Amino acid sequence: MAGSARERARPALPRVPALAVFDYFLVGYRRTWRAGVFSSFLLPVLTVLGFGLGVGAYIDQGVGGVRYLDWLVPGLIASTALQVTVGDSTWPVFSNFQWIKTYFAQSAAPLRVADILAGHLAFVVFRVLTTIAAFLLVTGLFGALRSPWAVATLPVVALLGVAVAAPTFAYAASVSSDSWLAMLFRFAVIPMTLFAGVFFPVESLPEALRWLAYATPLWHAVDLCRAATLGVAPQWSIAGHLLYLVAWSLAGWLLALRAFRRKLVV
Image (cartoon, rainbow, N blue to C red; front, top):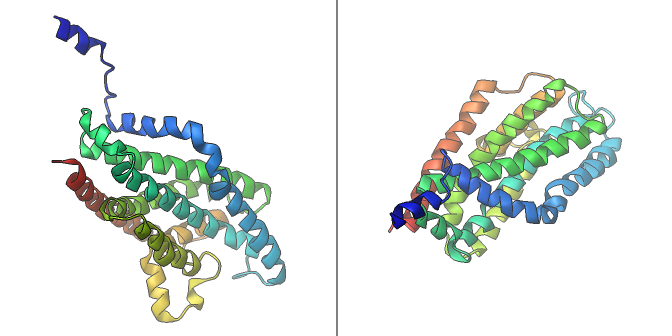
């Protein structure tokens, strides 16, 4: 009887257990969100001012007949989503395994590995969506959003977040030192940001680099975001872009699930 009473007194897990993991990270974020305001929001806005208004003032013809600020903003939307995603998918994941070992505590609860992974991925997507929503509001005040379809950038960056976060989770769960995380920024995030069509058209690159840019998930998100904010058709088909990002998401999920199980399942 006493055991039954204790069972009844225990708080029940949500019907979707991954929501318990999401709620855990959300509670922590309520106490720390101010620390990320500059890197995830103010810095991109300053970039809009510096590049869009500063450099853009010297580009008389714009890009393809579009004012440079208007052309740049969707690229910054996608690249900001990328940087927020990688930032929240590297050291936090690594520390949850190596330093504070949060994942091990969660796996001791009635949670599956897939629940832990899905809950944390959901939190990363939440971070991306809130950051980009605020970014859209500010850039809209600058008059840099030329189409009401700009709101369609939110599901695009959410999909980009999963496409990038899932393989990054797998990477962060597999490395033995946090030095490898810095290398990910140096050799993946920075080159993608520079050459995936954020600051200048990919078509101006040599052909070999152009196809490398097409292979990155960032370029596909940039093209979709640019089409949405400018109210034009993307360079590639919408379905092709989405399927490519979904493929990255599924492959990343499988890799991350495998890496998490290796660490958490004894």
